[in-house]
Length: 305
Image (cartoon, rainbow, N blue to C red; front, side, top):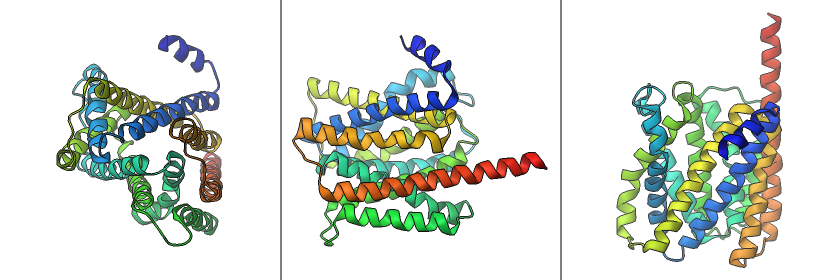
């Protein structure tokens, strides 16, 4: 079945292929988040984070075995960078799950989208990328959306701040991905994300540990499968399609999260979420399209040499 779908999709243009895989990743991510929030009724977010990393490692084991110990499997050319990225990712995952469990999914996802805004200053500082005035202004406007999402009165709650912390951590991880992806395959990145996260997450998880029953274990496994599928589809989408073309599809995740909030958890989309998320999305889209335009101009200049 999967081979038939892949065969059909491969016949489409690159951007349509990227759009398809990103669309599929949206629903996998949303399902994972919904399962995590549901499990949050019985387990602490730290334990859910540990489950996610542990079971995700089990899910990708067959692919690691197939890839072998050579380059493309668990062998990496940049071990220290992989470990550093794994540590930052672990922090982001724990903070992200805390937000998912303790606030509406749509709110958590909207603040999570601000990660792209934090990539702008981090790329300038650590990758020495030139950031122009227009992208800087767009990022600052996006941060205004984040403030509105948190609460304009200044009454910030821990869950919202946790979502913001997750966005910053994932932005940092994205900087590392830009570097390590030049040396290692996606499956290698997924391996180190999980193998580094597990020892970091196990101590907080043990402090709040509740042994799951069989039904809960099935839900945990489904959550891990969705997380692995979503991660794989997301990487595949951006490897094939142009970011400026397919990026808007990822924002369907916000609508899907709002639908889950309402239909499953009885939570209604708030005005702060609507205004703040709109500002974040528009700012992020501008930055993505601006980056694509700059890269296109660089390519044209290179071809003229």
